[in-house]
Image (tube, rainbow, N blue to C red):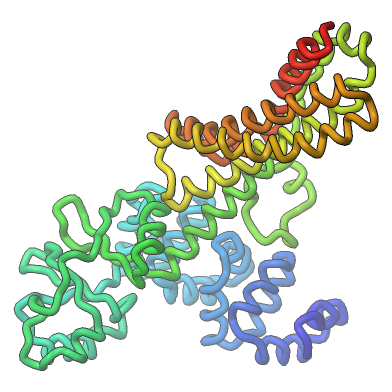
Length: 443
């Protein structure tokens, strides 16, 4: 059966067909289908899964979809599922859940699992401590490679990962990292301390989760050791959790850059009202900002009345300026996100983008001059061409520096990216155009 046939099976209420479809597909595909369906349908599909398959599928779901499933389960199935979750996944689920739901989950957990979950929930949302796994396997430096491998065999089943192993002293303070590969390839009598690398980075539990995830990306790490304020190993951040953090951050940035508020959940399961609400607030703000453009047109009404042909080139100029600013803003936001730019680079970025804008403006001005010459004559063609150059330089500088300035004052750079930059450049671009036109045409 094809992936697109599940909807037909649901519509036909073909329970045996749905069960067969679920048996034939991997967890991540099933999780996507559960996420895109309404709660009652998602719970029905989930109940058709066998126990082992159900847990694998549940772990693939986003927290909001996990809540959707759990809310439709009876107590026994509910508690079995939350007990089987890893502590970090459970903390992520509860971090986005209503208080009543959180109390129900914690009340049904074993004492050990409740303690582990409460420890993670004690860290501020958005920090490494909230998403790390406390199930970290540590090795003493005085162990031999042979003995260390035996420890891995005995205790590795309950650890989050056995591929990256922190080495600690008797007080559990971090001394270095040894990989499973190094233990296997090292001599059996070689001390773990001699195999360990102290150059591997660690992060405090209070560090921003996105910063830690980007560090893993930059350093090509499969796991990142998490320590407390006294440098004692308390957890590990694995690559799968890091990917989720980066994906969530990138999703939020994309939403901000397109002038929407990020929504929670699968796009196909989010209501039309929620989608509209996520967009309308920003559009209302941009309408207010766009009133600047109306004010500029009113201020230069006399100029337009004398040379009506100037109005024909307004869409070309403000469109080009807005797009140029949006391009620079998008590049700056992306560079900030991956650590290629710092807020201290603002002047260098302004100088760099001004040169980019100049090259782009000169290229476009050459084309616009020919276009303007054919339509409106040499005077207006010169005014339009000069305006394009200045507007492109101005727009690129504004677009490139606004995200950096926003981050410096504590505002999400994505918030002041493409839509806001475009609106600002529209208004200022018109001022540039009319002032240059007045000077060139002598009006």
